[in-house]
Image 1 (cartoon, helix red, strand yellow):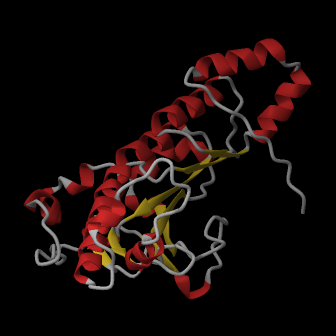
Image 2: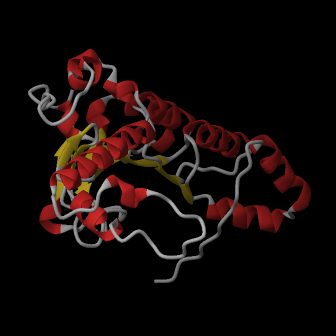
Image 3: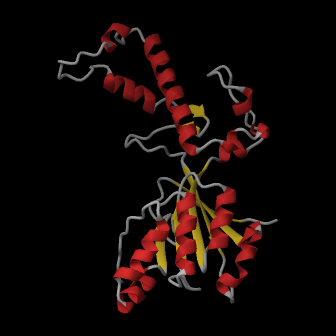
Length: 262
């Protein structure tokens, strides 16, 4: 079955984007654009996505059978609810999750690295307010520090003098592959969970969450009900799953379907 795909770059001034459509397109072209928006994948910031959906609804370019697919690893629960209220039709949200830090029994291993108690204890709530990019930045430094520590303990490794950078030299640092191998085999427990990389560089412990509003007879008229957890169906799929983006995931044992309840 063939699918028509249309890519569109959205500027920050979303209102201008829609006003331009009505000033430059004929009615037949607007109808085709409306059909395109029936199945829209949004790769935008939460705020821009909300404005885009709102403008589509206000200009009558969205319908009750529209399906909005929004992928953003840093979208929060509050932002999801705002998107749902703005949308007409169904919505699917894909984001990264960190189930390790939702477990109240998990505590930092202080013998491995030093972490503030605010970040160490999930009950503090500070960790949940950090952006995903900040979590990765912290864990990247932690991973490099651990790799350097391990390599310096290895007597076969070069001294720190070999790290001096020579601008005129075209040869790569001969300790780079060894350092990369140490990082891949690190198995460090950081703020994003366990960091353990396969030979292709993928972290097998990365997980995504797919949230979707359920079907209803009145479609978007019941949009307020989607704020209730029981309306959401949740799938958790590892990064190695190649079909997690499909409406009905078929990833075998790598997918866990969870019906949330109040």
